[in-house]
Image (cartoon, rainbow, N blue to C red; front, side, top):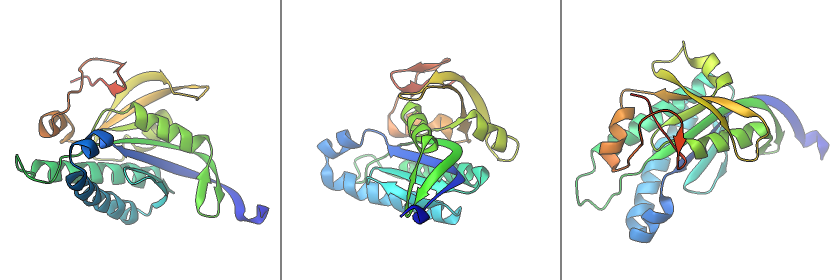
Length: 205
């Protein structure tokens, strides 16, 4: 029924576990255990920051928030917590180190019962796909709202064409003190410089 459909301005967070299929191929039990541990962290921070999960495929989550600041702080907090979890996993332990990408955008979107639709959702998902492991990638409109209001560093990352999105987007990384430790901690290599390469955002340091 149309009475169940409404439009509302919302901030969308999309996050996904990096290399999940490879993890599962190597060790299903350890990967499942580690995924659940990460999801507990992510889900708890989404709830704490007044967000609501409206789509999940296990290794990916999409949530909606009313506040861009709450959304970005949620992402910072769960990325930092997952970093700490990875840091505490000993070499040879059953648990696996996992990294997550995060994309954030805000827009006027369609709410239909428990689901959310619209370009805002698609753009957040495309930003997540372009993000480097362990990082947070946001649109310009999000950066304008949060850059002076959060305890994190915002860096311009260029203007990119997102898949199946007509407009080019100016994008920014949100970095905390842990960001530069991700590569060593979890064994991922992030190329250094400006722009993008093989879907991993290159970081200027």
